[in-house]
Image (cartoon, rainbow over all chains, first blue to last red; front, top):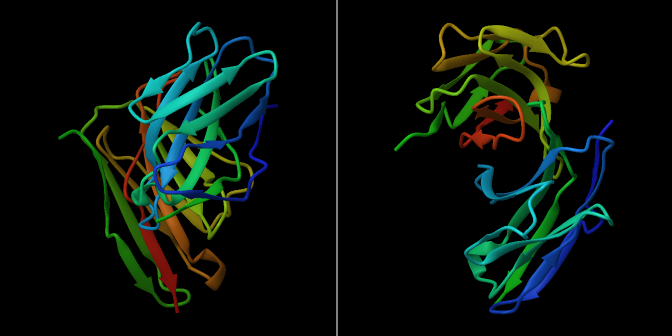
Length: 114
Length: 113
């Protein structure tokens, strides 16, 4: 069975600073994908970034980067230069290779202060 | 733009009065999902379709049904909504198996009076 753990229920960051949201996972599958989604108060789940288990380099998408440490089974999201609009819930998810049913973490609420 | 569309965005119904939520996609994806999400919780998968094959999660109440008449459309029917069914309902799609990204619609927020 797959498991995703997000240990930070809430995080606060000052505008323009960087913030790291933690995600650890557990799986016995050798092939899997890791995802981060942002969910603002409006409710839509917005795809942010994807990391494949065999990818050699950490994924980056604009201000988002994924700090992938395979041996530690962690896939932390780093948001650089935080903006007020980054305030939202952030969910980490994992999808085993060959499956199409992801497992979601409980989410981390991020608040960006001016 | 290709996208996942949900209607309505907000739905108010009375206790026990059937309600149907709709989802459409222009991505031509094989897989469609329905999730229920309550406040401050992760989305909970209710069921999904792989093409026409329907897959029900074991703990999805019988009160919830789904239809997928074609690739583009999927419906969630709640036959007799209870107060505990008030939640955000999210539709998502993915192309196929194997680490494919899920794309979500904006959600329908259901209120049960």
